[in-house]
Image (cartoon, rainbow, N blue to C red; front, side, top):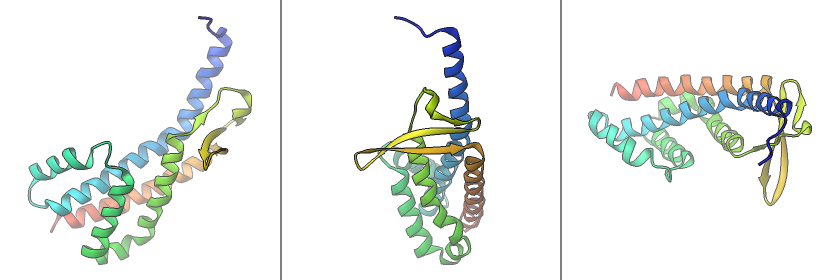
Length: 169
């Protein structure tokens, strides 16, 4: 096996660091949103039993085949049917979750190439993803992803407010 020259390895490492710094924070924030949505669902069904909540969370909600999309649909139904006032108060940020989920999925499944064309600018990377049989390009800058992370944190704050209100009933 022929290994790349030392300077090529350095370039690969720097590229990976840039990629991780651009995508990483947002993905971490999105995971927090998913966990809060799961917690609120579990709290809804088992408000008086931590043991049952934990069991429901681990046996049902944390299964790999129980997608964030499925959790979000259940969460939104619970909010609209059982917590209309909270839903109305937090509706703006709750609607942003769908965009956040789509972006998270795109970022998690994009390909970051290791050629010079993938490094668009000092703080921007170009990712490749596939949509309807075609390769698509997505340019991501640190500043754009910082903005997306701020939106995620606003969602987290809304979800924490919902969790605290639902958990007190």
